[in-house]
Image (cartoon, rainbow, N blue to C red; front, side):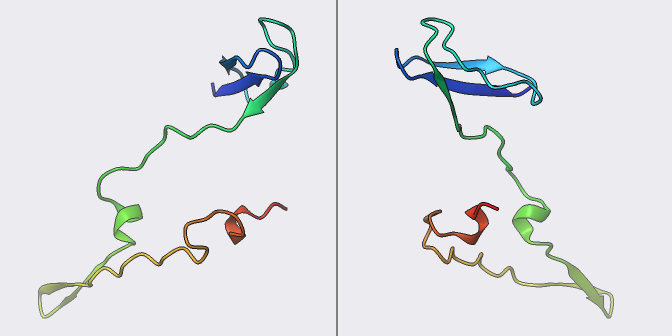
Length: 93
């Protein structure tokens, strides 16, 4: 079950709540009953180590019994210079 983070607009308390994805978001602070806002948190999910996502589907081809590997190309730089603002991937529908 996902954990959601909320912040109280009145007492500034930040708290986490374990909720189902289908559950309605909280509306009030459990401490002071003031309105709360849902926060966007960083994910704790990280891909580490080797694998297709890191190697870019590197492949080897065999010719005359020897494996030939291709050199990895450097990852393309972000066209927005690392800023999410203006990035086509963050455009909302």
